[in-house]
Amino acid sequence: MLNISLIVMLIEAAIFFVTLILLNQWLFKPLLSFMEQRDAKLENELKAVSSNKDEAQKYEEEIASILEKARNEAAKIKKEAADEAKAQANKMVESEVAKIETQKVAFNKELEAKKADLLSSLEANSTELKDMLSTKLKGIAWKSY
Image (cartoon, rainbow, N blue to C red):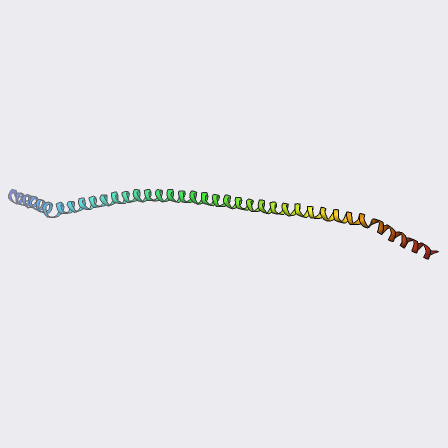
């Protein structure tokens, strides 16, 4: 049969409880404390990462805004430069057209003057030319008979 001794059972229970108390004191509390510290550290790092992510997003938005402003400013400057170049080109074309128009008017006046001189010269020499022409025609007419 079984010999169950109450004293041995009480001693074993006392040893078991003392072992639990010592394990709790030396092993479980430090281990739980370490795990809580690790969890707190991870949570702080996650918050820092989240904060850094938000900050990075804010900087990205600011950079995008600055780039958009720069693009708009560049487009504005480009348009102004193109408009200014067109205006200068138009002024140059108008100037050249005016110069050519002036030269055309002067040339027409000179041509009219030469035409008038030629007409007056022809009128002055018309009688002489008629005489020369009639002499030639008479000479040709006599030769052909």
